[in-house]
Image 1 (cartoon, protein in one colour):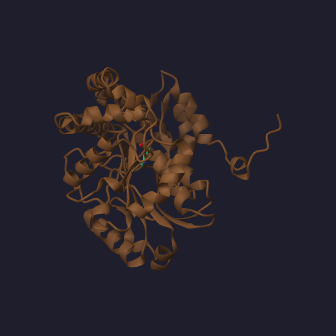
Image 2 (cartoon, protein in one colour):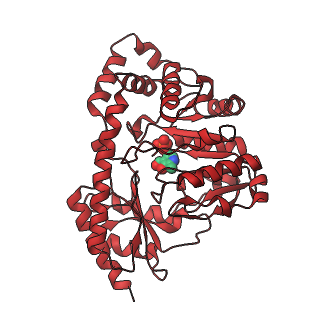
Image 3 (cartoon, helix red, strand yellow):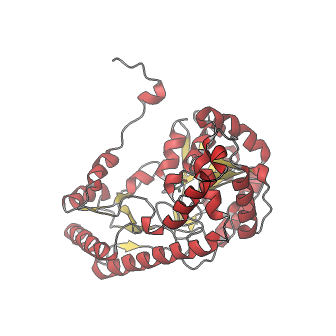
Length: 394
Ligand SMILES: Cc1ncc(COP(=O)(O)O)c(C=O)c1O
């Protein structure tokens, strides 16, 4: 068949790195590459019980029927209440749209805001899934420099801030770096946004996963009129439910809604009902989230110890305070993508940093995901990786 693909489809390229990483799905590879949450943190008993409760009660009719595009109202009300308490704000149910994972939120935001060549500010490095969503509209990315404390608001030119369609940021335990935006930077970014009428897209799937339970103020509380907040159940329940949500003002939601309808009518009713059953019972998350923090925090500590034990002194990394990732920096003359091929031949994998930069500006960094790998394999994998790196140090 000679397909008559659209220009958009024709310009899609398969990622060479994804091709390389396919090999890592084999069982005998120690993979620090993926960004999956740990199945050890899935609340299996509660998910089973909630699914049964939904399917064995009158809820079954609602759960199997078409539902409202905005989402299941009791779940939206629960989210409004959860956010109001956690972040000390007033969020109304009309400001919440349930989406099929926050990945769909990114897609809808691209559709709602972007035309070809529009400027989009992104912290660098940033989440590839967001770039994939925005790339469909051919934006012009402006990379915002970041360091240990997250993106640097002072580095954003005011004229660029005024003319950009939005700034995309992951303030908590960012993917890929694991960094958290500091309080003073949050305040500076909020001020910059207000001053320049800049929309902030605050993507927060890891916000509840701070190991010490010390949440910093969200951007949508510091600059409420400027910010569209994205939340997700993927890292606090399970990603297979495909449940996320957008918090934005009603005018913005009214534009997102027809686009969501065009895309999937609504997020599956069944998983919304199940999630509601779970989270609305006895303050479930206030027990469950500390368990995830404990599992992730101790795996993180373990990987940090292995890195300290084996890595040569020329290699550096951060000490995440939450989330699922450690960001490692190699000497500039070592190319992490090349290193990956060697690592895979020795049955270890990681995500090379190059892919997370909008202009491929750096290729001596790598992302290590620690939550799905058991401790003994973390140690073995880091040792193998360190030995490979040592061969390249000069
Ligand atoms: C920063 C970021 N945003 C969004 C997503 C997508 O999450 P969801 O499962 O809610 O679609 C991910 C998933 O890894 C992520 O890391």
